[in-house]
Amino acid sequence: MVAQTRIDAIRRMRQSGASLQQIASRFGISRQRASQLLAKYYGSTRIRDLLTSTDLVRLAGCTQSYIRKLQRRGVIQPAKVVGRGRKLWKPETISTVNIYADSHRCRVCNRPLPSNRQVYCSHMCYIEAYKYKNRPEQARKLHRERVTKWIADHREQARQIEQRKQRKYRAKKLARRYHDT
Image 1 (spheres, rainbow, N blue to C red):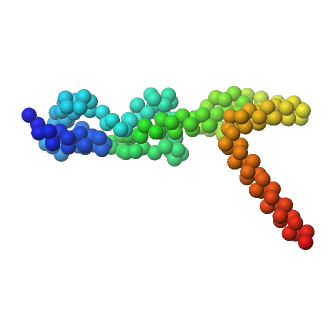
Image 2: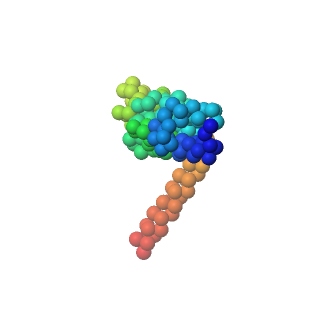
Image 3: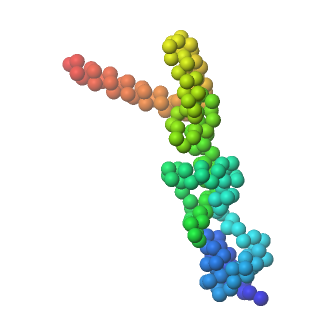
């Protein structure tokens, strides 16, 4: 029988991100035995507060390469790196991945952008976007519709943009008045 304080210490180590091998080495037991004790007393060997990369991929609905790309770009960072480069993530990372994916979409077809593109997902979308370039009336109408839709969807951002625009206008007006005198 293993003392309850020892079991609690094993659990604390596991929850802090220690691998089963690290726990086994610390307590002088096998990795399998550490796993058995965690499963017996706590129902699982899983780290409850952190997600593995596999879990993050599954829950965020993306690929491992997409997660690596976001990490390289500094959008997300692992909460802890354990073992041989095994990354553990906070659950909030899922929403960060989803928000980033939603904000980086093609302006024409709304599909996610490939890593080598900035605005449009393909050459066809680029062509579609510039279809109205030589037809100003249609382009203005299409632009007004898109702006109206964007303002309806992003009220707070639109308000902030309008405030910045007003401040800029007032500063420009004051500067002009100063230079005229």
